[in-house]
Image 1 (cartoon, rainbow, N blue to C red):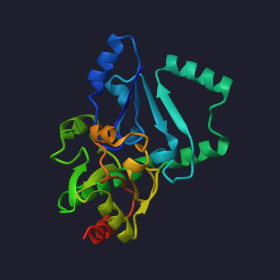
Image 2: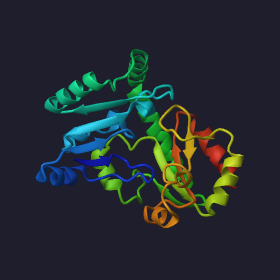
Image 3: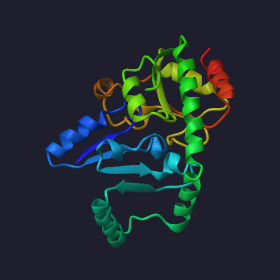
Length: 242
């Protein structure tokens, strides 16, 4: 099995799915794509050679930070095996979690359009800030993944972006103390804009050299853009970064 993320977390890189599918299939392996960040509203990896697509329903699919669950999509023959496994061992959604997820999916396309619009506008704003060293979002014209994103993600790259503060962790602490609308929390993909610090959360198990090699600096901030008015979001960051 070859596993990759569509829009990687937290550096928001876009993989070459067709090339990865060719590598996996030549070796007799499955290509499994985690499509949690763009969701099926923006990306359909099965069209580009993936065999199985997985989702955290906790994130944008449900969209309201009130579900814990996951979904798997794939070819009929593979799904039959997955269904048999689930029936035997029990890793299935409860009825209420399933209902909440379906409720969220009904508004998914509308929400993802707003998430994407807000993320792109916020990324462009952050690019112009002296306190920000780098912004990672594949729809930015200067991103090395821009052309690939336009091909694989024609409807936009979703809610997730990241940026590196020039002042490192001290600058992060200063920014967090000044933000009023945006909150620090580990999850992503719901109606509110949230931040996470990868070096002290998702990548805390790596030593400093390993984090540096992975592109995770102490000043890197992951931002999951919500559905707020974009002018309010930009004003909040403008105040916090001065």
